[in-house]
Amino acid sequence: MSDKSVVLKTWLKLKNLPFGNWLFTKVVCFKAPYFGSMKPTVLDLRDGHCSAMVKNRRNVHNHIGTIHAIAQCNLAELCAGVMVDATVPYKTHRWIPKGMTVQYLAKVDTDVTAVAEIAMPRQWLDKEDLVVSVKLYNTRNELVFTADITMYITKKKEQKNKN
Image 1 (cartoon, helix red, strand yellow):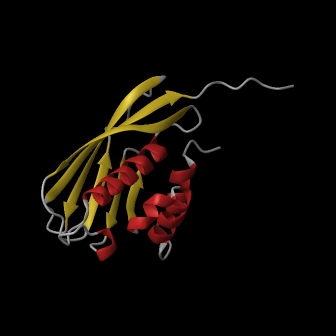
Image 2 (cartoon, helix red, strand yellow):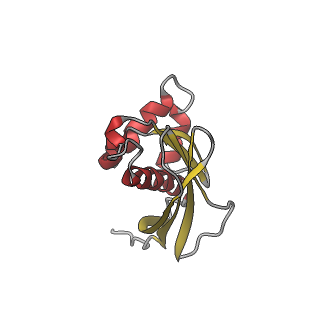
């Protein structure tokens, strides 16, 4: 039996297929429908790393025609959540977002790519706050947004055998 999470196994099956990234992203957005509103695309996923992008389209704009601050937060949370889900040992641990601190560094007037990363390998504790750093870049490779997303990681309770 594989030690890879369902999310990571699904990514590995789909990533090299035609439209595999698109299909994987659709699966993620089916599971967490709110993310679908910004029409993201997951670009890469592995232990400790996820990248995703959102196109600069009117439906993610604010009143001045740039990508809305909350759309940037949503992309950061999507990236961090998918990465954590693919990385945390799914058989023994679970996670939930606990908080987010963000910095808006520049207007986002192009497509935007988010990168979420944590140091690997790592020791997973029974209970911890994992801070995931997420950085968003415009198409000129300029850093336009940063987020530190705190994920609450806990060990799953052991289930007793029912005979």
